[in-house]
Length: 258
Ligand SMILES: NC(=O)c1ccc[n+]([C@@H]2O[C@H](COP(=O)([O-])OP(=O)(O)OC[C@H]3O[C@@H](n4cnc5c(N)ncnc54)[C@H](O)[C@@H]3O)[C@@H](O)[C@H]2O)c1
View 1 (cartoon, rainbow, N blue to C red):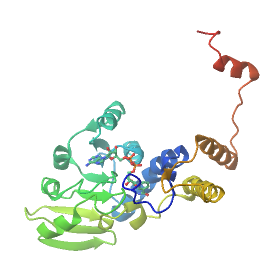
View 2 (view 1 turned 180 degrees about the vertical axis):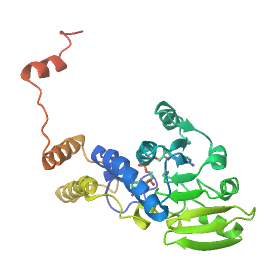
View 3 (view 1 turned 135 degrees about the vertical axis):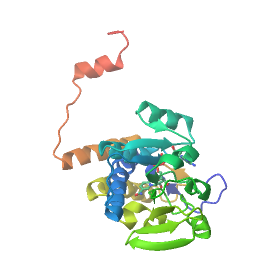
């Protein structure tokens, strides 16, 4: 919107703060997505082929937790570096067309649309479970699915069974809306505290700079992340060390230890 001059007022992109996207997205979405899938299905995660579409902050959090529950993780990506990160984290990386054939549980966390499309659903195994925890219910092509499905029935409050034109049944959780919000309770408050304090600092920044900002996207300075991290540690009763004068000098010099 900034590039198109479509913004009418300044925006602070709070998601850019490390204390937001490396906490809320990784730890919050990681945990609450699994929580949503379990509440919706009560399915056993262990031993399942668990496909995570998108290996960004949310995808990393979801994949790590599913791995901790003994699933076989398969990642799909469109970004080479993110795919490489998944490989180096010990996960199998496949194109969605291949992953679709072997996955038992699918989670989309991309912010994109039709990441799991009808052509992929048609390749899926009987009983495959699909959930979305990304930005919107467009990540799974649910409208396309409705067009080709022979039958749709609700079998649990957040679990709908679709019988495809090829006779196979697949399950959509929470109408493919954000599973952690539709079937669970969203993120725990401890993690949201860091997102909300970022928003509070963003409001403070906007008020303090009233009249001086342009209709552009702003990010909070890294010092705010440091301040938030200190506050969070304090709230958790955790103390850390401080650099000694000698260490400060050593770290900023090139004459010693090189
Ligand atoms: N459920 C929640 O509570 C919650 C919380 C935070 C963020 N989100 C949402 O989750 C989504 C992901 O957030 P993030 O912080 O991980 O973003 P991110 O940008 O770090 O990661 C998204 C990843 O998806 C990949 N991707 C895009 N299109 C793809 C495709 N077709 N197939 C496979 N991979 C694809 C990108 O390459 C990227 O690596 C966003 O839409 C965000 O708004 C949800």
